Amino acid sequence: MSPELLNTDVLIVGKGVSGLILQLLLEKKGIHSILIDKVNSKQNLPLAETIPPSTLEILDKIDLLSVFEAFSTKTYGYQSKWNSSQISDENFFLKGKFNNGLKINKQKISTALAEKSKHIIQIKDISEISIKDSNNSLSVKGLNNKLATINCNLIIDATGRKRHILKQANIDNIEYDKNLAYLCYLPKTGPELKYGFFTESFSNAWGTISDLNETTRIVSLYTTKENKLYKDFKDYIKWNTLLNETSFLKYCMPTKGNFKVFGKQANSSIPSQIVFQNVLSIGDAAMAFNPISSHGISNAIYTAKEAATTIEKHLNGNDKSLKDYEEKMYAIFNEYIRQKEKLFQLH
Ligand SMILES: Cc1cc2nc3c(=O)[nH]c(=O)nc-3n(C[C@H](O)[C@H](O)[C@H](O)COP(=O)(O)OP(=O)(O)OC[C@H]3O[C@@H](n4cnc5c(N)ncnc54)[C@H](O)[C@@H]3O)c2cc1C
Image 1 (cartoon, rainbow, N blue to C red):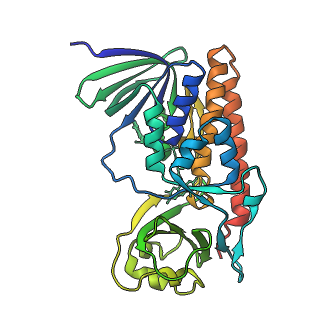
Image 2: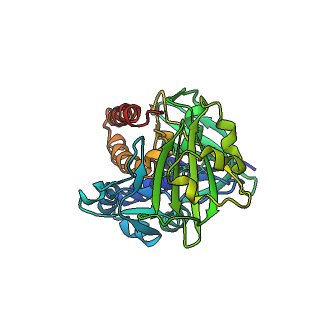
């Protein structure tokens, strides 16, 4: 039996926030797309990501604010002790149209976005990719083990830090640091957090605490592979010693019991080409930020919005639109790297 043949304008690979939002925005513009996502055997951990008020303005413009608000709690700032003897209350939340940010439940938001989307296909694997100037095609193995070929004008790499499509096209990864994240779900212990979020820097590392619900907090410790103690971060039993010199974090660590520590990728990186022939990347695939910067979800939303406009122009014959998108993203990432180097100095 010959494989099923599907045709679409845009094939989106990846069902994260970026891929899902892009599909909804394309549909609004009357552009046909198919979204494919690989079934993931790994546990999808809740990260209680925070987004700032400025991102709420973007969500409002693309009519998705209510979806995010339905599965989030409001945050009004954050407290930090960042290379200083003082604990500071950040008040930039008061500057824009909205005076709160959101701490989101990404899993629930993704489900709600997926329910609005049409044409989502869960796949087992991508078996073959053919990227050409005029037409792209991708063969996939479905959940029923049947093969399908999808022909499209554009392929969107929305596969997050995996950059699956860009990697298949041999596009290099440029890494700007060797940051690592270790997270642990802990019962609430010690002081209340004024805004549900606190961050503190300590020797060659940073730590954040974020309230997940009434009883549980996520504590994330960030360090770099250059820290000779980095392997100790994998073991909760060593956290009390690692956090010994902190002035706040140490009081939030249960001293009894052992807890599982999860490692996550956390470096800042960008592909050497964000756009390649008829492939365009969005979200973490386009630019990955150190999670402590709280940029990832905002970047997923922003790049999806920009990509939707770019794709519309491209399909209407504007040859420059893909390159313009790439230049804009490089400019944003370069500015982030400049700021990060100023702010994220290790002591
Ligand atoms: C510890 C930690 C804390 C964080 N905190 C924050 C925060 O406070 N605020 C914030 O804004 N951001 C935060 N982030 C970052 C944020 O979670 C990500 O930037 C964001 O979710 C990226 O979305 P995305 O759509 O680009 O990619 P992803 O969410 O990674 O989605 C990628 C999708 O691609 C699919 N996929 C992968 N490979 C394939 C393939 N071969 N074929 C088909 N499908 C594939 C996957 O199944 C997945 O569905 C944090 C991240 C970490 C690790």
